[in-house]
Length: 60
Image 1 (tube, helix red, strand yellow):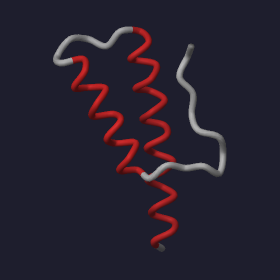
Image 2 (tube, helix red, strand yellow):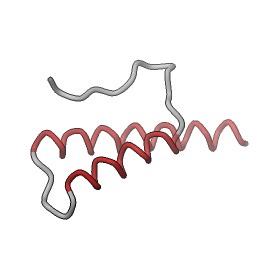
Image 3 (cartoon, helix red, strand yellow):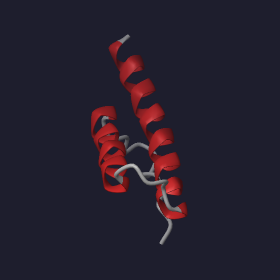
């Protein structure tokens, strides 16, 4: 099953997404990501960017 982003309107906080990224990196423990991990990482980075921008806009 391929990873997917949450549905629109259900943006998770950037800190939560960041923790998911950290956990993924810890599980890899210095080895290169597998193809599945790389795909998950890329989706998480996009999700984190959206969440971070939403938090900046909300704060403004």
